[in-house]
Length: 81
Image 1 (cartoon, rainbow, N blue to C red):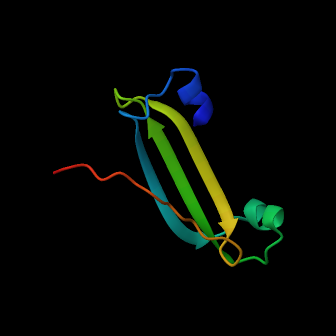
Image 2: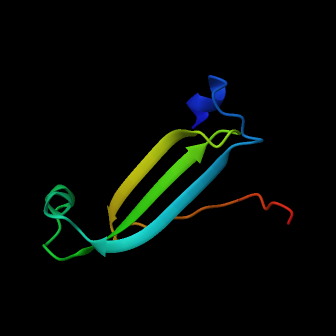
């Protein structure tokens, strides 16, 4: 995201981030890549960063071993209602 800001593609004052975090059973390919047994749960996160005109400029998709990771978000700005 820092590269998008530096390239003036993204203005942090107007950008929006939407993130969806979930858990599910790993696919065979994911289990192989993460060295997990079949049927083991993974955590997933999908984040879309949008510019001030709501155009997507970045997509991040993560799949991780649920026993080895946690997702943490800090210092989120709150909009006034």
